[in-house]
Image (cartoon, rainbow, N blue to C red; front, side):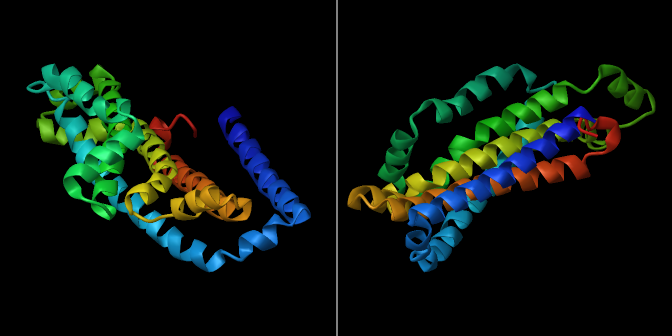
Length: 242
């Protein structure tokens, strides 16, 4: 109940913040200047979302199976080594990672998608491992005692109990992904970074804000949508928010 109340208060604060920002932009005359760029914003939002969706989907498709494999008895001993290797992607500065990707994939969308995939893989893998390891051992033993195979235990017992933590990792990964996409402009990948960096070069605040505000709103929206999926799809028995 307390968590639900906190969420409601956070949403009200967010809505109030959006209205306050809109009022401030209107009072300073920035809002009409920003709206001049709306056709560019719409086009670049599509590029932005495409880059984030493709790289995020690849990270999910790779990260969840990898996390599952690393919790199986045969591969459990490799978990620390593999997560350290995956962690290299987050320890390398983002700009350096983009430069490295560009050196062997050229310029444009492919190196951006690869770099974003590397950056967002770690939270998904770590949360999948943490979620599966947090499943109470008596539940697994009971399922084994009922004659379930390892695949059935994974599908019917482990994953349903770990899905809340796994979705938390996906939520974090996608928010990081959306917020990092603006750097794609530096290597010709497109996205809202084009307005942000051009606005900085031309010292034009309205153009900068026309890129920065939609980027922030996209990150908040994606985080909210995944949070709703996490809240409504995870059963009450294993959902600490309900």
